[in-house]
Structures are given as C-alpha cells and as structure tokens.
Image (cartoon, rainbow, N blue to C red; front, top):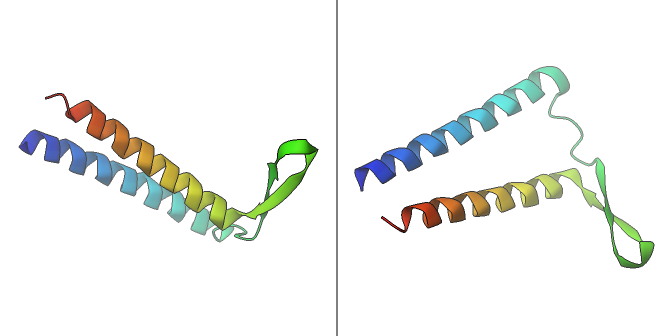
Length: 79
C-alpha cells in the first residue's frame, strides 16, 4: 500500500510541477495570454459556435485528470 501512495504522490507532484513551470513560462513571456480568445467549435449541419479559452482549458484539464485517475485506479486495482 505504501508503494501505491508513493507512486501516486510522485506522479501528482510531477504533474503539478510541470503545470506550474508552464504557467511560469507563460507569465514571463506572454502575461498568461488572452483568456477571452475564442475557440471555434464545429457542430452538426455545418454550423459553428465559439467557446471562451478559459472554459476550454478547464474542460480539457478536467478530462485529463479524470482519464489519468481512471487509468491509475485501473492499473492498481489488480494487485
């Protein structure tokens, strides 16, 4: 059980560290960019819609974290 906790904590620390490093680079070179930059989303019947960049990043991060923890739980459920 302690090996699982150690692997989980080290993985979380690596992800948080790389995210903070990316944010630091963004702040240094581009002031975190434009949060209201529109993201084009194609829909059915050749129509499209716009989504704000902040919502897109939030949805992408939540999808990544959900997939990551699902894979981690799946891998360690067979021990």
